[in-house]
Image 1: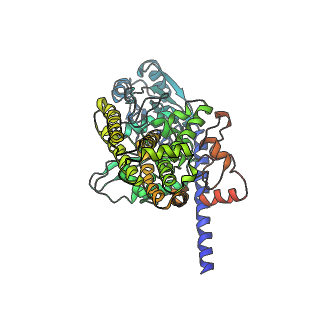
Image 2: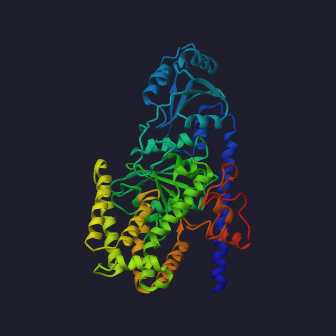
Image 3: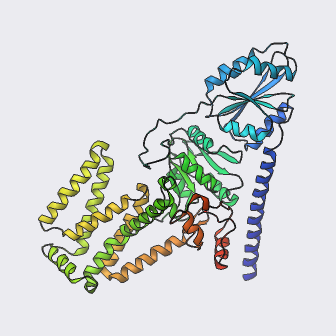
Length: 533
């Protein structure tokens, strides 16, 4: 039995290494192909450019035969160009080419002098230049028999008007967000990553809805095993109707019953572009502005786009403040209840007298008091989130003030408890998104019950269980607590708990598995180049 298990692990390791070697070879071959000159024959040129872009479905090529007998092809990326401009300034002029232009050179001269009406018209000589210009919203005109192409700038991509995103509020940086149109969202990412290694794979989900989606990754940066795993999970979605990426997450998570999000959700294009550059995978779905990023870590859930627009000392301080807020929102109230009920000797005498005096008129135990106030604050916050924006915030503030003051005056709650519950509720609001706060609020109730029944021992047991659960989680096969577990101290300080200056950031190294990271941690070494979490 032991020999068969060892043989199975050896074969699995050989398979993983072969897959990673194949991905590296593919990336090397693509880089070599990007520097190749444009083939003179039109079918070969179109095929080579489509192959360089991974035969993506949004790369379109229109072939035309001119009156003089020369054939041309116009290539664009759907969503990045204006269809009306393409028709009026490229396709329509090509149909009016003179019959005397019977050679490729004559056609090129006519296109440069009179045919194409674009204000920015320039030639290009290799496939890599064509790929970059296509990503920037240009049209590429290929002439049969010429080893070069003409580039016409006709960008006309859709974009949202500058407005503040409701789910990810930032004080600095781009205000553009994703929309409900898939091709617009893919185009927004392509504009920020104008590189030929960006891959966009299409898929459909939903037996009845047939919702269109896109899987994005950067060839040579993303772990091929992660890409294959995500691709396999997406193909296994067995739902009738898929309308949001949150439905796909259930198939991407290895622990669907876990309260913690094992992925990162965003509607900001620059966040997706940064994740792709670091070797992560992005999943988009038509009909929703939210994209899913995997693999993600626990620290990604505490990060905000603002962190990368501030100077590193301020960004690091804010990240530490968010971490402290998350810890306090989970265990702050439980520690207070445990100390008040079982560990009076830990409280200074003056403070203990204040607490006992304020609780003298409260008719129920500390646990019941904390649960009532916690549920009341959660109810007010939920009501404020569902109310119209103009009155939602006012309702929450006024409701909390009026209800809290009335409960203290009526002897239904103590002032210290109301202060702690309010600070705990405000601490959750310091986290970047509302979805991140939910698991912390749920776990706070569990720790509160343990602290009220077993004291500090119960809080310690609950914290140990939570830490062990986090350490056991994986996101697309990667450790969820990395670079804390497995330990990589430099990466932890570089862009996890804190953020170092940009000059000290190292290039991400892909293809680091859980076992590989653990082996390097056991040897006390950082991975070469220092992969980001």
